[in-house]
Image 1 (tube, rainbow, N blue to C red):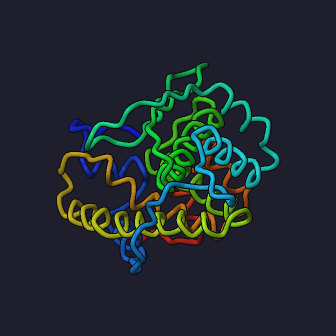
Image 2: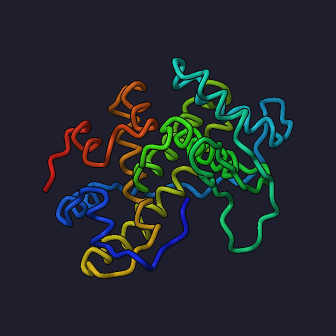
Length: 250
């Protein structure tokens, strides 16, 4: 995640991602908004009812990545072993986690909070995907939308992995995922749509989330793990991903 910047505008954001306003609007129009059950906020538990601790949650996130990208097991393990993970107390109104890219020839740092809730498990998967993308891309520039697309794909790997292990836990995680979709494809989508009518509006990092969420959903259902790994390596731009998905620019 990157803090918002007032130094750039909507026009800059569109240019960076090789998007026209028309293409962006067509993607927003394609974003679904489904009603969903209320979130499941019980503490995450193993099949025997034991509350999952933070180390188990991290381990599951890594196992999920290995299961989805079996050919990349070594780099996944390397990224996890060398990424600094700092558990911090969460202040009211603050983000649950942030992953910091420390620059070339270094490994990232993840600052996070954890209360053992299903939402926290998805946050860890999201942030580890950020860290893995930083390591896999080896210093190549990756645009904000593509960074967040990879992070949302990390959440998908967790959902897919848990589905084969624990139906109840998967149910809770899916409810959190659906509730997040309400946010990204609801208020997030509306904010980006409103910004499109003001090309000089100051850049907001929040614009990246609805687009990345949608692209992540499309990628996980239509691309192979090999194709998706190319996103983590920084070889695919937003325009390239749209081509891979068969989306014609408007």
